Length: 134
Image (cartoon, rainbow, N blue to C red; front, side):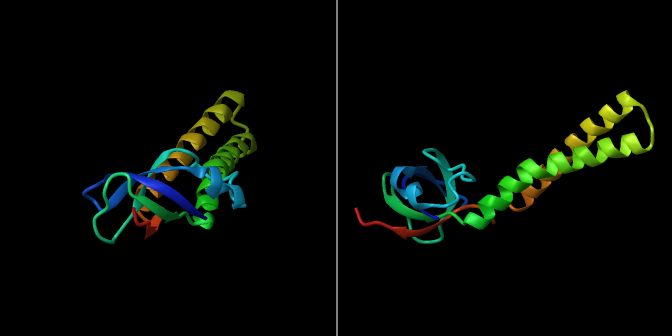
């Protein structure tokens, strides 16, 4: 999905802080239910020249990565928590121990998501593909 945004600040690490205006950009996208970038500020990669504050840019948000990130965020905790809960029930450990195992599974899933986020943080950033002339 392509999105028009306004530059708020250029960071020293090669990223740019942007403010999105999704009213017209998001109206034609099929992945809007998975998108978290609606009318908000976010970072994007930019390898071109300097950008000034209030520059208008076009940003590419890869829909596949947005959908995968959303699926991981919601499905992975449920799957791991369910597996730990089922493990507790199969071993006949009792209700309390099964519940504790389910909570441990939930914590484990969020630790896994944290590691995945840290590892792929820059890879999942949107990319600035065009700078509009002011």
